[in-house]
Image (tube, rainbow, N blue to C red; front, side, top):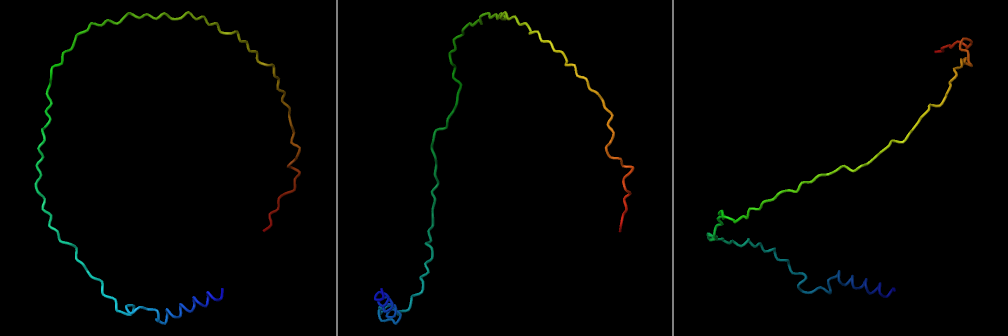
Length: 117
């Protein structure tokens, strides 16, 4: 493990010293070349479309006359007999008794309220 660490650190030291650098590595970089967009002149030729125009016309269509008579329809109501069921309702006999209820607390004998500031 230490041997790989030593080898990697030695390679980094040599690379930083420039011993492994190629002779072109120290050459100055050239400026970026500016290229103008291509100038193109577009000439559009006139286009003439030659297509027949649709013309709609009325054409007589033979129609055969047919006599039609609707059949007479009569509907008879079905014979339904309905008898309402006999329902009788008697109100239950309920008697309510009223009782006089006296309050269990007498407020007259209560102590007076004293406000203290």
